[in-house]
Figure 1 (cartoon, one colour):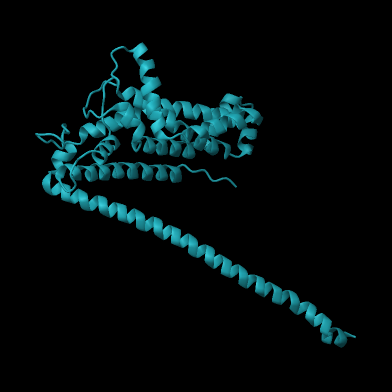
Figure 2: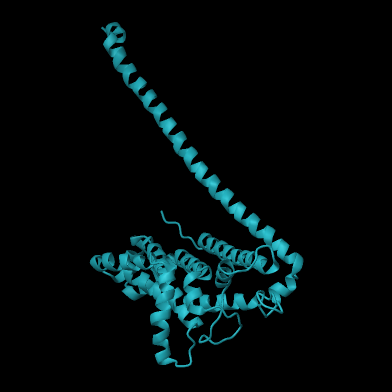
Length: 319
């Protein structure tokens, strides 16, 4: 009987059938995985090549610029008039204007965004959260040029009712609209970081007699601090690189004034000015575009690196 079962053809076919099927299926999955991996690798390669090409172009043209202009005059000069005579190539007024707008936007966006994230994560009912969260994310989809015209037609006239001496183009309007632009990034990323905190930490705090406020400020926010800080730095990086809204709202007057009511010029605004103007290519004035762009790229890169270091340093791992 045992020998018949061992030599039964049907039994042999029953054993070999699934094996062949699994082999064919496995072979098909391997081809599919190979195609997917190849496509992903190609996308990564294209991204790397594009980044390297951009950096190479910026560095190449910047080195040409420094053949005509001293790096000391560029980095430490306080007068920026490369398109006029006598020419001056001190980039500090552009850096100052960029920092003024960025700091103003951060003052507006960081407290508001964090408060919104805490409310959505800890206090908002599900129905309210499902309504507010898409509205916040909708702000991120509005074109930046719309924010610029919003600053010109609404924000600045409203500010002139309060501050009559404010200029039509001013740093305060630019800071307000940029703060509104980056607010969804802070709110969304911080909300995701806070909601990633395990519910067991909240329950343990409540079991020890903590109030909702204490749970939020002493347990949830510290536990999600890495994601919250990363959202702050990424939002600042976005504010530094903002172009159209700042160009329309802040104007194109490079200076180092402390007043938020005066017109200023940021690095991105100057890049737009040269790109859309009649500056002949190949000259020193045209090469300032690449020098400013390289400096902007370096500042943004440093902020992103710091953001990643903070994220890795304070990241909490939960089982």
